[in-house]
Amino acid sequence: MKLPARVAGATAGPLEQEIDARWLMAYSAALGETAPAYFDTTRADGILAHPLFPVCYEWPLAVDLREHAIGAELSARSVHATHDLVLHRVPRPGDRLTTTAKVTAVESRTPGAYVVTRLATVDHRGAPVSVTEYGSLYRGVACDGDAAPRAPSPPEPDPPAMLWSETIPLAAGLAHVYTECARIWNPIHTDRAVAQAAGLPDIILHGTATLALAVTAVLRRLGAPRHVTRVRCQFRGMVALPSAITVSASAPAGPPGAEVIAFEVKNAAGQPAITRGSVALAPRASG
Image (cartoon, rainbow, N blue to C red; front, side, top):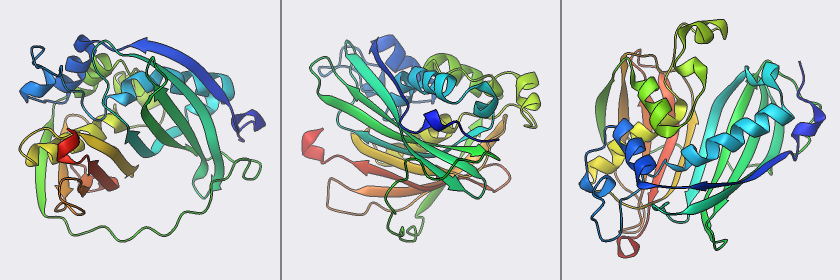
């Protein structure tokens, strides 16, 4: 099986969506957030969006791009492999955000074809809000050379030592709650028959949910919500439901008030679910 040539450079959008308090609060609630900043609509600056909320408004274009550029048969072989989110500012209630998507890289890798989609979002004035580089691995799928290869990346340093760990229990219905609150629907996360037909043992938790829960754990350790400027990770394994994940994180590194915290996640079997995770914090003066 091969990716069609039209994948390289394929685009979707623009898509305009309105962000309201209901959506923002639902997403935070699905992740078990309790801080008033995520729910207090009397707050002077409005409620705070969870740092991973951009995955919600990006999802429709990610689906659209797969449908018209890749097709259902190959899309069924896709797994979320990497995520790199840059937040220029957090979304706010009342925002009208416009997102565009473009495939920026198609690469041959040993397990299959690696495809990177860039999802860029701006507000009604055209000011940037978020940019995500979403990496998907199409297992067992070939591509006709590197149609849109990325520049070689420098070797990544070894991750720092982890300072603390926290085990988070996951309820059997978490994927269903996350699906509805995020408005991200993929039946392998909620329909056992579909998951098993796709070769999975059972439904699994969304990768973005696992990532968001890890970010929540990291920020909670800081004692109060902090504005985040970047979240990066590599996805390595599945998270079953019901089960638990263990989040481990390093001490903050970098200039005071604008630190980077490294983290990783293991599933209930002790296998890596997320590696090379990092959360970059905005300087305190800007938040």
